Length: 387
Image 1 (cartoon, rainbow, N blue to C red):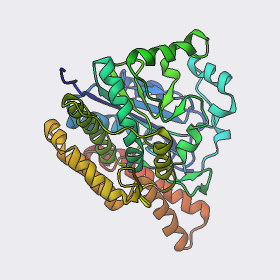
Image 2: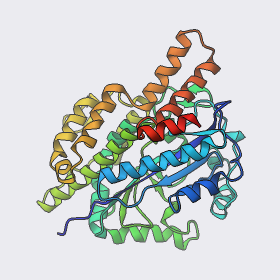
Image 3: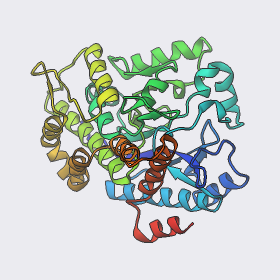
């Protein structure tokens, strides 16, 4: 079997905050989107809500290319936003904004969504990160899709950035998924025996007039409807750029590890989606803190131990792609915590020092503004801050 290209592309959604109030901007300023489109032709688009904006890298052959492109995109959005008194935050929820205050973008696709999904879609005040991996053979794509579902909770754990919702500590590390799961056609994907079976299932909904195409299927992982890729969708958007690249590297290496198994007439053991969903909940609820179930051993294992095993399994693939440093950055995420951990620490520190709840939440926003550009090149970062 010819090895897939395993090309990579990353999409991120950002929330736009007013630098003075730290609240979201309900209505996008005139000229903001056109200026972003001029700076990033073909790589930026509006989202359902006007307080959001989405970017996507080019198709990249290496993680270094992907990091450079994503850094350029973040820099451009931050620079254009600063000219309007705004700043992007790479977090999956805003610490205190109210979803009922937001306005949706007037675009045909979004008008259809608003009519079809009503209040469910209007409360989607959440942002995510999507990673595409190129797998050209359709049946191989579905075979790896089936096996990769096992690892979705492990990837989510590293990305968590949504502990707050409408001014409250939710007690969860990824409240975004709780909100997102209220949409239809979300959650863990089913198994398919072949690409043909997948297409037949999609066509049932298309022929019934319920969806136009597979872009309206929002599973945690899906075969892309537009590209010959598998699209990882479970992750929160990472506040730190290097964290996003580490997760992309792990996803890519896991896909190739499973390809190697298939090439050698082996495969990853299949587990019931009911069991994987339990790990998904643990990732949503606890993030790094309480570990995931190791189904082979039948016990809950510390996430750090599970990650070490994954890094060992995928080391040949990291060496193949030349991304060992990017992959091992996942250990740094575990050591210093995810964005959700740091947001909670910022909030609790402010409260301990005597800040009001409102001021403590503002401090979280300030942390997110700074961290969103923290891993950018020094000149870009200083330019953004001076804006």
